[in-house]
Length: 223
Image 1: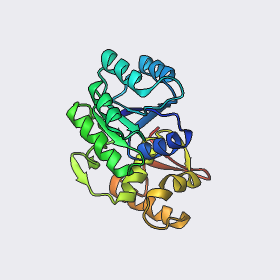
Image 2: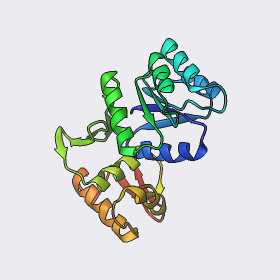
Image 3: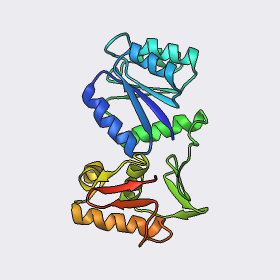
Image 4: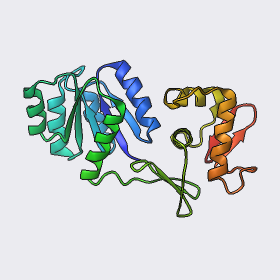
């Protein structure tokens, strides 16, 4: 799974952007300042860094310079500073792209995937049983054959993958897919979509093994 480090000092942006990126199949960790970001980078590897210029401590330019020298990790600046000086400074420090706030979420995803392709870091494949999910291409295959899922079915599958082994209640699932459904989703509709998803991904939809029902609680993917 593609791992993204979000370095941003606005808590509301951290929460909303983290939720959105996870729905898109990315693993996300966050830091509000320079020190926290560098500690996380020392502890584990990331495929890409989304970096604000104004931070709780230090600034994004310093963080970008340190990242490029020590790790070579791709960096995309996210900032309200759209002046020419900020753009040129960021790119001179090695930033791979620059996007101004406010931005459209779908545009951000497109830019992320473009940077990952250029850096050869976007090939991570997620697996669940005999399913293979490619978040970059938004494709799902079963035993080598591509499955055609609706947008909501695909997002629902990603929610389960990102919470593998965790029992999710129906309320949690509704909260996860509410903003991206494009239509009204209630408890009965959720039941329909889970059934449709199982019909497409399970060997025996009547006895599911990939997405199992935990009676009285909810659903769980994997072990």
